[in-house]
Figure 1 (tube, one colour):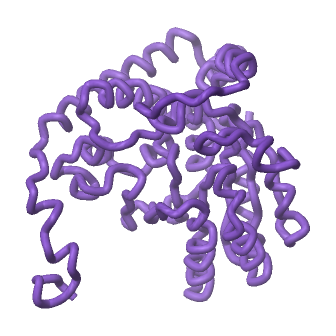
Figure 2 (tube, helix red, strand yellow):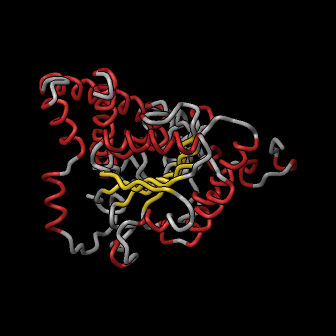
Figure 3 (tube, rainbow, N blue to C red):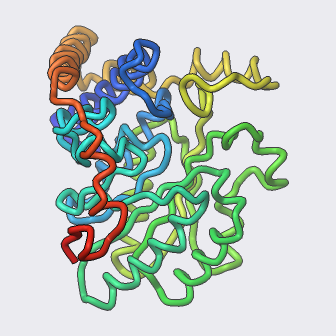
Length: 329
């Protein structure tokens, strides 16, 4: 096997944490403890874990809406959960939540709220790293909806033209916010559109963590040698665009049911580990229980952390950046 037992079980641990996060934090929305939108990563565990596992700690990750599985591998768990609960101990002081959270100490850059804007902005960032002589790759994650934006094609063109150390990852879950893929693109393989521009591409089963990791290892190595490229991870969004959103009609109920029954990334990986003699079902159950216990304990501690006060959020020195308001310029 390509990876050691320790590596493979570590990936399972990260996948288990991602699944537990999706379940427990979804419950916290219903309990009223999360007062912002939560884009659930349920079912995307293989995408995030396979991706980050293939990267060096010094490589940069730019997340998108459902990147929590990946972000959990870089951020401190307690600080990350505090951020969702608007607590002062949050990684972003409790004011960023997950989608606007960044920390250069762990090489996670700030995602941009404008759909499709991450690709061109962080292509420029990767270009700057190249000119600074740094051996760092930038991995930018976006959904297939963002790839319907013109800025995506502009970023691909600039990356190819200037040989930028970047990997464009497309999480193709077929649903954007509410628009199905067939209403966005005649070609269901979005990454193929980058080929005429000058980028190589890979299309991968986004529900298979080992397939994702192996593809990303190839992609990151290419980018490190100034060969920008695209990796398209095929999956299906199981839940709504965000928890608490009014559900719209989906016309793929049969496909969705089949996906849940047969393509669950956690179950697929569990079966692989057992069938190939890497571990036993009992050991996997023990790992899952241990991760869940630690998560729940950390979540309960985060819920007891100091809450934000008005001045923490609306301090003028943050709103108006000038010397008169006390900003540190």
